[in-house]
Length: 114
Image (cartoon, rainbow, N blue to C red; front, side, top):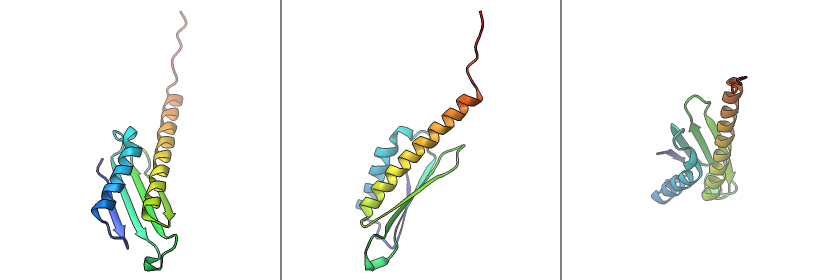
């Protein structure tokens, strides 16, 4: 999984890029086969004024399912990334679980009377 990372108002250093990739791999590794793409957008809403304004938005594309988009806002970039990655992993798990239950409901097991 090679995510696309976009930064706006934030300097995208190699350390930050590696941190985001490591967090994504750790949290989404169980579903890496089903993920076709990940886009991470990191932004600073208020600029140099500070405050709780660092935002991380993650979009996960899974073939045959709608895109999963989550975001989080925090005072520090690492906190925003951690929270967004956690939310993305939870949302992906729910979506995959829902897709499995729909598939099972659509094709119930056949019963044979002997």
